[in-house]
Image (cartoon, rainbow, N blue to C red):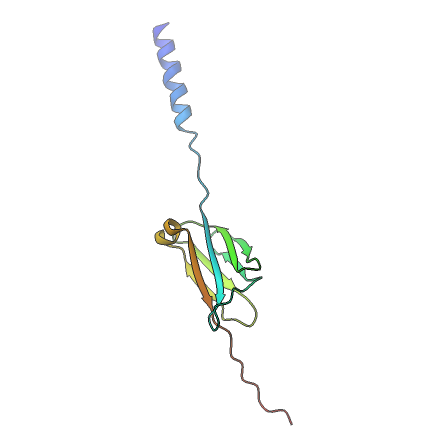
Length: 111
C-alpha cells in the first residue's frame, strides 16, 4: 500500500508540473507622423511571425501579441511601409513611439 501511495503522489505531482501556462506577451506603441509628430489613426500593424494583425486607434495607439524577435510590418497608404523587430527592451519598457514618413510622389505638369 505504501508503494501505491508513493507512486500515486509521484504521478500526480508530475501531472501538475506538466500543466505550465504560457503567458501571452503584448507589445504596445504609438505611431506618429514624422513631419509634425501628430498621431496617425487606422495604421495596419501585422505580426509577420504569428500572422496576427492590429489597427491603431484615433490617438495612434496599438496593441498586438508578439514575442522577442518577431517582425512587425507597419503600413498605411501615403506613407512608407516599415518593418520593426521586437526586442527585449521594447517588451521591458512597455511602449514605443514609431515614426512613419510620408511618401513624396512627384507628378508631372498637366497641359
